[in-house]
Structures are given as structure tokens and as C-alpha cells.
Length: 319
Image (tube, rainbow, N blue to C red):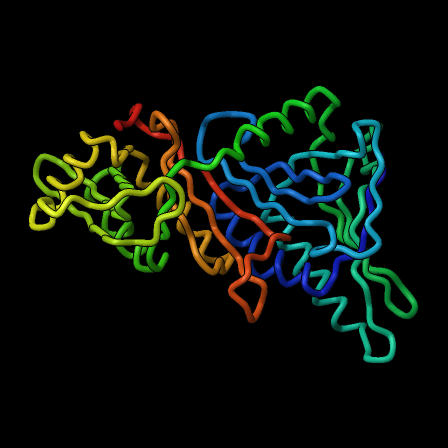
């Protein structure tokens, strides 16, 4: 199998300054998955433990001169340490900038190689950044896992396809930093947070113990998908009562997720999404968060980038 490409300036900025720092907050390692058309960073798709996240980029947004070939329908996947990837990328970018000039701009190449480490008789796979200067080349090697077999790639692709389902009701959430501040306080109260989402555009986030309850309600948020009008007789009721009544009517769902997972998911604000949507899957199987990016200078969705995550629930949910 072979893979090599040149990172674009936009690709470097997206990965170095936005996406890898945010993905690293979810888990240290992930699957890096290259196909003929896309590059994907995948967390926990092959196990149900922890946050599942999918960051997907078209090859054009990250790379020039993109070349890939494998016996798995030109698909290559492996596990990589995100902190090592980020460190090597930043170092390579610094070297690239140092040796570049306006007359001869430097280019950062990324490729898969096998090398024989010292005191080892078996070649080891690496993802390599190569920066060519006027008289020399600087190489940064990142150790990776053995690339996935054909059967494992098929399993990964199947899990990816299953993880693309969109909840029937999505609501646009308020400022992620505001939620992050709230969840930081929730960490001191309990380990589980109840999240309720209604077709009326209401979002309730609450953590409770026998002694204390801390939460917030956001009302009349933008709804995409299945929606309904809130009954007028509910307007003056408490948030908890309104939420309970809407669940009984089938107009809302509620799930309980880990406060730790919820806090980690909010770290995706580091990727600088333009807006975010939350939804609960049918039968309360997971809490889904979808982050949207706009074409710079417009309100048009940038279809070359997508990011979403799914939080496992601590109970089967209601609704």
C-alpha cells in the first residue's frame, strides 16, 4: 500500500490550529483513515466505550497531489497518537517556514513509509512529514500501528456508515463556551448529567444529587427536522415540569450521559465550528452533537468539512 500527498496551507491551518488540538481532548489515539476521496479521524468506532467522533475532510481541502493505492479498494487505516502527530506537524511547519522564501516556497509532504528501527529485525510503519530545504531534507517520523487488514477496514467502514444517522430532531445550541462554563461547575456536583431535548426547541441540562441540583434551560432554539408548537398551558410551569410533560406527550426525549464525556465533547469549540446542533437518537440510544462549518465570509455550509460526535448514554433514555 502507498500513500503520499502535499499538505495545503489551508490543510496545515485546519489540522495544526483547530482540529487535532480539539480531537486530542477526546482521546489520545484515534484511527486515521484515508480513502480515494476523504481523510477521516475516527474515535472509538470499533468499540462502544467512550465518545465516538468523526472528523471528515475532502482530500482537496487538506492536500495537493494526493496519491493513494492499496488492495483494500484504495483505503488505508491505522491507529495514531494524536499528540505525537500534532508535535511533528508543528515542528515540520516551523522548519518549513524557516527555510521557505517568497521565490521558492517550501512544501510539506506527508507519506506512509516502512523503516527498520535500530535493534529490530522487522520493518515498522511510520507516517512521515518531509520538508525539503535548499540543500537538505528534514524528516519527522510518527510511529503508527500496523495498517488495518481488509476485514478490519470493512468493519471500520461499516461502523462509520452506521454512525452517520442523524436524529429526527436537532436543535441549535447556544454558545459552546457558555455550556462549557456550566459543565465545569457540574463536575463538582455529580458524575451524570440529564439532557432533555424537545421538538419545541427547548434544551435542558441538569445534574442532580439528593442534596443539590444544578442546571440550565435554553428555550425557543432553532429546530431542524421534527418540530412542534409548545402548548400555551405549559408556558408558566417550571422547566422540570415542562420537560416531563413534553416527554409524556412524545414531544421530547431525555438521556443521561457522563459529565466527563459531555465536558470533553464541548472541547470541539477548539475546532471553531460556526454553529452546533444537538439531538437524541431514537430510543435514546445516544446523544449526538453535530458541528457545522461555513464557507469563509458566508452563511453557506462548507461541505468539504464535517465533524460530529456521539455520547453513550448511562441509561436507556425515555421518550
